Image 1 (tube, rainbow, N blue to C red):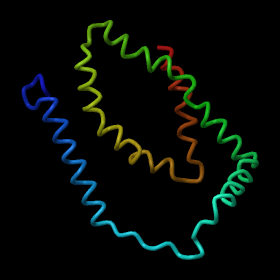
Image 2 (tube, rainbow, N blue to C red):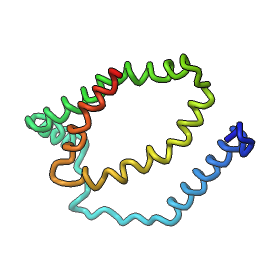
Image 3 (tube, rainbow, N blue to C red):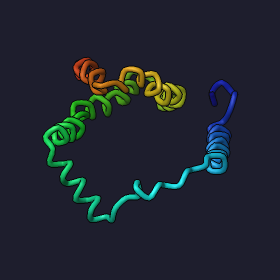
Length: 140
């Protein structure tokens, strides 16, 4: 946008900062929270930690923790090298920053679009189906 003469980086950041503050103030002033009923009031900290430890002893929870902890292990190298390769092929850093800014709405809206497939009985099925494709694309 800066190269097209539409907006400078400073005015763009100032505008987004103003939007952030306006939205934050609007949410804080317009969103009313209901008080927590006494039966839903959390116990003391020690009881909460005991409950957490007892849940972590469940085999399905242990498997989920293992999957989520190792889920992205295959991607950091490809994710780190991709921008360097783009620079090697002549793409300026500024253009990559612009692309990131332009793709931000997509990053925000993609989970909303995927919610239809990930909110059912098996929410990780889509991720498990796409995971091998993402690993294969990392090698390209």
